[in-house]
Image (cartoon, rainbow, N blue to C red; front, side):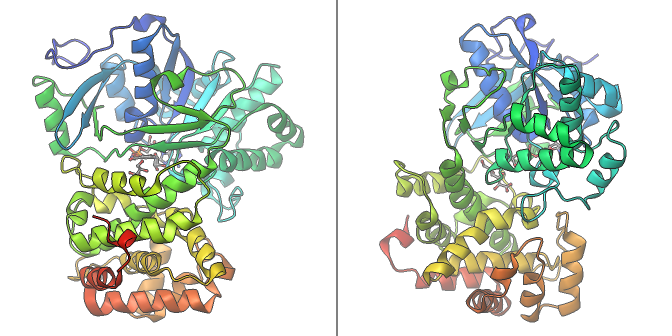
Length: 499
Ligand code: NAI
Ligand code: CS2
């Protein structure tokens, strides 16, 4: 049998857990053992256990796919490797904070529900992607969502994360046990408020008293989470194996050195002392979320759509083009910063640090990956800011070009007529609209009419429509690279020029 990271003698520079993992109890359940969680929340917990005695351990659950990942994690005693790769330095850690794992396909639905209902579990956190919340454009539960339709008709055998959470809370309520804190760690504006609303809407459909109990007893803190964690590739698995002296780790992850976690300190049944390893526990996280979602994620999406169309495979390659870099910085400083409420942060320094992170040549962060699920990302990354500028009578050329870039991208054919694999819950609907219009500016009005993405008031605003049409025409005429270069040439203020 091949050695795993649990059994092999790993090279000395690999930092292994030095704490007694037998002391860990699965008091924290996480839904979504994906790339991000491994490099963020689970690693914060590992670092805390490394520094001081704690009995907080994590039970990992994947609800949608990922059974093999869970099986492989078990084969290596729930240990996995994190490689933090900066432009010049690399750190290799084995994380030991996970002490249990479950999957409905492997262990059955009841095993998952019993775990969530176990009064020992104090926190249920999640990284289930923006679409995992089954919310509509207004942040309410989408009652037409196939998973929700299924779960409401068979609530004892849920499939969605929301269905599992509500069923487990109902079990707690019935046995008069304490509830758990629900902690969303997804990139969603007001993520705690969104999960609270969809949980209450779902519970209300089943039992008004249960909804009242949840409302009165459960907390849903908002969080701002940040660390760039690209999806693994065969090349990155090979890099990991090299660092581990030839041992493979199918659960490993490669990420940037930077990490940030801002959390509202509102937990009903306690929490680990994450502040001791760098998390910021605050009263109100919304200003931080806005800053990160609009400046980092907004410019990421701009670079993803216009970069992919311009022929760039990764974000680092895209920002190596000075024009893209200038436009990304102008989007941050001129079109996102004015919309923010955050206090006491040097936002120009923040913009510089983001661009520096984007240029990290050792992270293969694909434009295609960030371009995924745009229908769920655009509203919070760009559209709220557009509404701000329209109300003030400001121009917003970078946001307009980014939104037009998304419209050009969802046509699912690139500038050389090759197909684009558009991954989005609305991909087929969007492609049908684009196919109906061809690569023609008339598609703008049709896409703006999709009210699951664009609020009706925005779609009816003639200034907005004209700005997007104009940007879309530039994309058709000049291509993405040409349109970015043209826009960069128009940016003259010092804040816009950036690097
Ligand atoms: P991933 O693709 O590696 O993992 C996605 C996880 O979500 C999987 O565990 C999957 O089982 C689960 N999932 C997907 N759809 C689901 C659904 N409908 N219901 C329940 N579970 C579902 O993605 P990754 O990189 O872990 O990112 C996940 C989320 O984390 C992102 O969408 C974002 O909100 C947040 N995030 C990611 C960062 C990154 O750089 N990767 C950084 C900051 C936040
Ligand atoms: C990215 C984010 O995939 C995306 O949409 O913009 O995952 C980004 O890498 C993280 O938010 C960084 O914290």
